[in-house]
Image 1: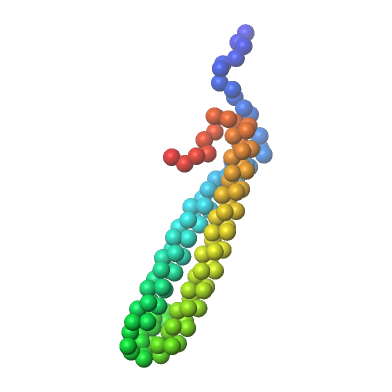
Image 2: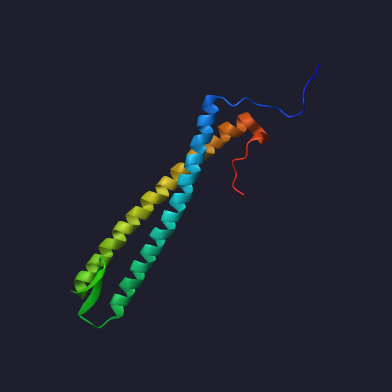
Length: 127
């Protein structure tokens, strides 16, 4: 009769599997959010650069890209559009960062639950 093997085998319940799956989905979403945040920051930087270049120009009518074409638009209108685009991009970035914080919080809670049950038998850290 064997007493024990030394390694503790913890049974994985349906609820545990759901938590593991949820953690995986949250981890994927976290990576997507990080990529989206990076793109949003680059967009804001590009808009800021465009705004600064617009300040330096002497022309009253400048070329402004609308979709795939460039149109000649008055400088004041372009300044207004760029400011509006920066506001929208900033709000989007703020929303993405809030969602990222939420995802990180949910992942931390799941880590506590899963590590509490499985200890060293599960690895939730990225390499």
